[in-house]
Length: 264
Image: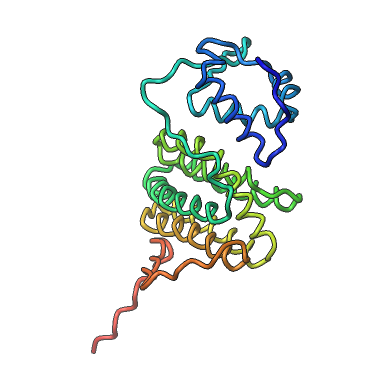
């Protein structure tokens, strides 16, 4: 392998992943070749080992690399079917962050609905505990990004469909950066932070009440409000208002039985 100059641009892990993918496409790294070690790649490209790990994770997600326990990471033979992949530049603009939030709204609304239909008591308890873990992380001075992603993974697990978990794990390489932006914006204002806490709690309450329609509505509203908070915080341009938004129904547990009219 020829010497490479250090990578000094933003999103180093994406640049390193693109560089290694290019070597694979050009045949400089052939199927079955063992990838240089983490330490070697770090030294060769002048990046941290964390950057190397993130780049390798991207290429493994794309099916270009295969890890063998105790042996190393190897170039994978080309797959018959091309795996799902996003352009690594998907988050280079703040508008793209809003687009990722929009993707999450479409996906996580249905996930929440299915979770409300299928969640068992242990999964509901895990969701409730994850909200506590998120609050503790924030109270300790953290950004809560990993805990936020973990919460949404638990919602996916509660569907009983493992394919949702697989999809979310793939998307996390993009969602993580978008979540950092949204949570960073929300941390600037107490009302934003309180709204996020309430929205997460509403999702869990709807799942615990086995109310799929409300769970879908709450998850969709959570994502819609995330976009609105980005706009109110001056991070992105304000989105166009939706005409005649549908009212959000209350959970079955919260619905009140109307009083009968007195008959005489």
